[in-house]
Length: 160
Image 1 (tube, rainbow, N blue to C red):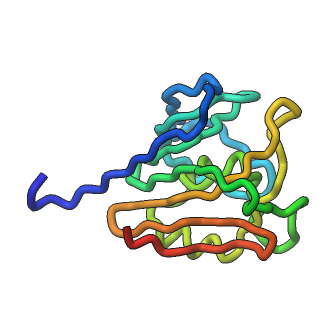
Image 2: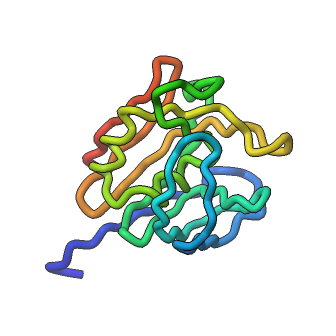
């Protein structure tokens, strides 16, 4: 709408088959227990994904503060830590979108927190291997791309 600040966030789901994805909603009072030592600040989350072992696995989502996250394929480049790392916030790769959306209100806050985050290659169960992804994270004023490779965490500003 002319004269209004609006954020539009979208992408295509680039798989040639379905996981049975559907619209998911995680309310503020959902009892989210991060796998490692991450926090849960209880933002409501809405997006597309699947539920595995009573855990919402978001392909993309946004929270009640307008922060949006999408995971995109990054095979051959993504390389997560094989185990948790002391003195960092450890987040399983499968829970990264939910962890971001539940805990932050702005890209600036996410970018600052990621300075001390380890993404761990832990599958949710034996049926679903760890997805090799990178993520785009946006709010109304800023967008970043987050990649975790053999050399660690990388955060890039995306002015487009």
